[in-house]
Length: 252
Image (cartoon, rainbow, N blue to C red; front, side, top):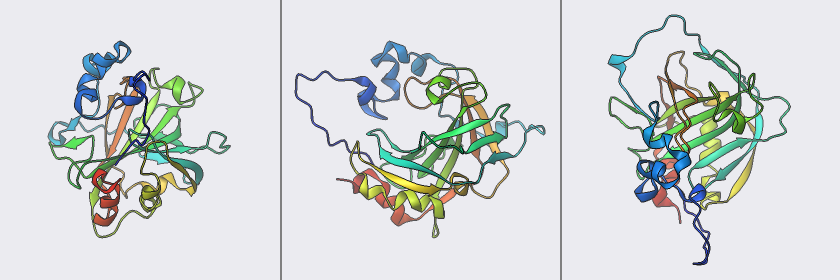
């Protein structure tokens, strides 16, 4: 999906902070070698994403339903050069809070990452019984009861929550997801961004109270093992036409 249209003179030093990727010699298998500060990416014991195996899951009767505030927020949808990210406006006075589920604290919504593959079959980061989904949408929040902001919480215990929505191709798409996909052709290149008004994060969620959860890491450098993952057990839907707009092959 992502094409970076910036060009650099030969004398400009390469910054791995900007040039890590999800494949090739700068992909996840090499992150820990590229930058010593990213050593967890190679040697961590709770690294994400994972392959979820339903037959090995343990049922916990004490887990609560997941809750997201329903009010709408403003933010910016951007092509970062690594993925498409929707980030909430920093000055929001009424944050969307994430609570319940396996969480012992209240988390404040920070941003959404959209992950698409090279075609409409393999795009998700997490897999279920070895099966990949066309795409994955990840809702990130930070522990606002213990930490001041997302950057502070990123490398702290119980700092981050990530709610994962697996996307499946269908005839009808999630209406709130269309708010994103309708804008993707306007942010084809790295660095491009556009404002999104009155977005309903909760409206993205499928109609289910069930989920899988585990303690893992962020899926970008430096792979901090501070993330509680919550993967909802029903997908949300994207049409084949919307998926084609989002795939890398459709971008210039």
